[in-house]
Image (cartoon, rainbow, N blue to C red; front, side, top):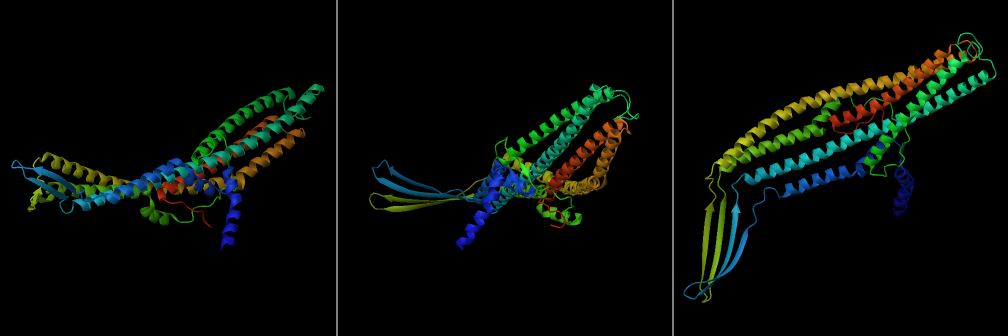
Length: 421
């Protein structure tokens, strides 16, 4: 048995080391690490545990009061008193306090779950933004290299005195000098885009490292790209899951339950609490006696219970309305985000299937035509810009898939798996 434990530990060590260096095999591994490492999420879970601990003592009777005293009466005799008092709440009051405590603890747990899902959504979106920045900056770098090659070729032609008309020797293009200025302007534009994209990636990396509770300037790499597949469960199943798992609905239900318990407790505020007392007395002469007493707390000042009842009624009505509104809102948002995910997935697949290959083919064709002197320089620039725009739109579509997938998980209330997994 010990051998197997050692084997598992050593086999997992490379993965732990990779994650500590910022390399994650999948997005799910990254999200799991955020859940484990983020201090805000740990604080939210700690608050939920504290609320659960408070619920354990809710509804407990007040501590008894024990007393000891020595009395000297005017006649000179001395007396020792042993006294005990216990307040007993009216039946039903402790029960409602316990119910309120349980609802408060469950609400704190639901808020912690909601915060966890929100952080998962943000981390998923940041990872997609980081991937987008890396892909777009890589393509811009390639385009700048291509432009540099064209600039070098045109400058060589101009210095050799071949700067008349024609593209790379034909008449379809304009002046090579004008082409050179256009290339230099386009290169400057791409350098600006490169700086902006790098800053986008740097900002995403900083925030993602913060969520991971790592050094802010540390590298982050997600090895496997996300699968462009719809959720494994159909919409109807997601709607059913949300009824029990959605933290928004859970929170609304427990707020409603807390309001109902508060209403019942407020109604019991008119009922008197009981207190019992026992006093054992012993004289120094050896004689002893006992005093027993019972008292009731009378709600003589009715303004307090009256205000409590009025507040409880308003609170319960507000909680009922809020719960109904949240039920409709969760269904609406879930349906919306499910449709968004499917639409973004189809858009990303369309880019992969036809749009990106077509843009690349168009660029290759016009570049060959221009280099052979049969094409216009303006078409080369248009093709360059088109391919870069298509790649940027594709990466943005992937980022939108990640963002809406995370929001769908928030409204469902649980992580989702792609179909086929």
